[in-house]
Picture 1: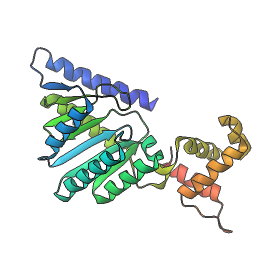
Picture 2 (picture 1 turned 45 degrees about the vertical axis):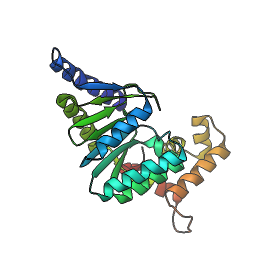
Picture 3 (picture 1 turned 60 degrees about the vertical axis):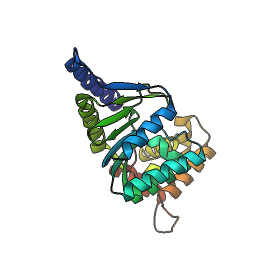
Picture 4 (picture 1 turned 180 degrees about the vertical axis):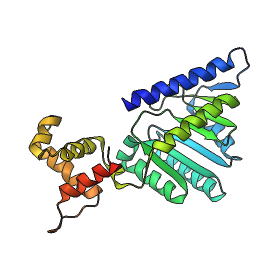
Amino acid sequence: MEESAALAQLARRLEEVVNDLRGLPVDVERLADSPLVRQRISEAAASADELRAMQPVGLADTARDERTTRRENLDALERGMRMRTIVHADVLAKPLHAARIRQLHAAGDLHRVVDEPIQQLVIFDRTVAFLRPTPVAYAPGALLIRQQSLITALIDLFERTWARAREVTEPTHRLTAREHEVLALIAEGRSNSAVARALSITEAAVGKHVASLFAKLEIPATADDNRRVLAVLAYLRGTAR
């Protein structure tokens, strides 16, 4: 329900902007392929002081390209660029992507996490934006936007999303989607067998998920603490959704 409301709000906002632009020249360029997109992003980044980004999926780059992109981001941070990035929670389920995000976050590219659908978006300063026109993972091409009213609308979208996003450093962000489901059912007071029936998986599979989420939440086995209760407390504090 919240995801549908967020998408509906975005659709209304963009419709308002489009209506305002009717009859006016709009500075939007379609970039047809990914290499051209990367080239134009690199050109914009060279002189930018601020970056806002939303990433619904992890990078599709090769290991060599990924290292190059990471180095470029770290170099930009070192020269003083302010960077904030919103990622979808599914990205953190992938160890390589999660490691990259945590390294960049520690270096100053502040990251937050959302569960709702987001569009791939990069905004440099308040002058240029790159928006993927199709909500398909790794789809080629992008829109290069210089129209100020459109950029203002996209910045507004980013800031609203950032305000309700969660901190990437919360340990529950390392949980997979299935582990989140298991934890939510445990918070309802269900046993492993009840969780297994609810999710149509085996009880052994539930046990593995429970052990994994204990490890990721850094809840050790001790004689003094009930790990299921501690995990539920993390859920009730709002750090797991």
